[in-house]
Amino acid sequence: MQQTSIDVSRFEVENGVSEYHAMLRITNPRLTYSEQVDALLAAYESLVTKELPGTVPVLKRFFLSDAANQTNHLLAALLECSSCALSIVEQPPLDGTKIALWVYLQKGVQVRTLPHGDYEVNHGAYRHIWSGYNFNKASKSEYQTRLLLNDYVMRLAEQGCSLAENCIRTWFFVQNVDVNYAGVVKARNEVFLTQNLTSETHFIASTGIAGRHADPEVLVQMDAYAVDGLQPGQVHYLYAPTHLNPTYEYGVSFERGTYVDYGDRRQVFISGTASINNRGEIMCPGDIRRQTQRMWENVETLLAEAECTFEHVGHMIVYLRDISDYTVVRDMFEERFPAIPKVYLQAPVCRPGWLVEMECMAVKPITEDAYSPY
Image (cartoon, rainbow, N blue to C red; front, side, top):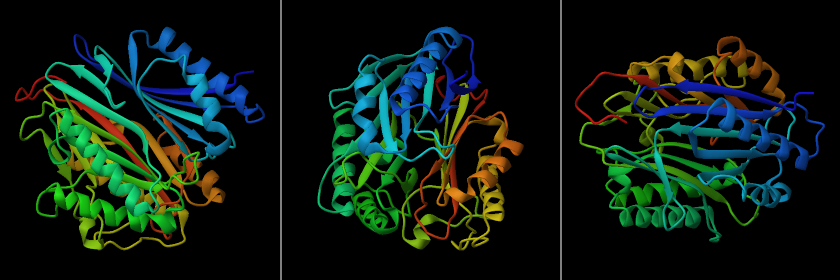
């Protein structure tokens, strides 16, 4: 009996860097957790040795159903696997299994682990710095977020980078998001102000969503991505003003989306996006179908601003507040986007009225010669 399912998207380049997104899921929820881990890691090993030889993982994010009881076993199993940026978060897969994996892979790159555990992917003129599974145990979500960001600022500085000039994307996973997200927002706003990240300059693409660490004292985890070697004009921010308002209008500080142009491709990072209008109001309260459709419309508009469509999307992560909405949302996504790797997770959004949120990455070829190839 097949125990796993693997969906892969490909952006392949001759004489350049190819990139892949893979979503690995368990298909037999009756397996024990240990058996599910073994099956998932075996499927991953087969993927990189047989289907995608020569690739290296850039980021692995494991989604668990019960981090407190599952994390140590997973970490022990991963000791024998290749190094990369690692993220582990309790966001239960909604198909009834205990673990799922999103992995971002590339071919034609050089990699190394930096002194503080961040992961560098090097090719051409660029150093891509991925950081995962950052946390601390300060007393409140506000203090934890401030420490996370300040520590990240210092690590970037050691690499000759800064938050404002080099950070492209962040993720904040917040235990009990309905209670603790306000502290995340306050700390992020204050740290960003010290880093010249304001409504007059720019912010950073981000997802702020429910997610739990194995240790109950950890209220906030952070993953991040930065690029060294960028020139002025390579990074652009997405606004979609017909559909979305600037986030600072309701007191938060992140960009709706960001894209980066290289000599051969445009990479697009869409932040966590929900059913919202350009006045910051929740659209279609209580209606999961219409919220999903409005969310798609918002994402589609952001992608269009980057001259992309859903055909350029490499993966999707879909977050649901209420597990009873899973069947409806899954069927809608599978009908419209059957070929895009995706995963459905239980993870309440930062405002209770939002029933569903999604994020994605996209890539398209370009022929602009102003910048070095990726």
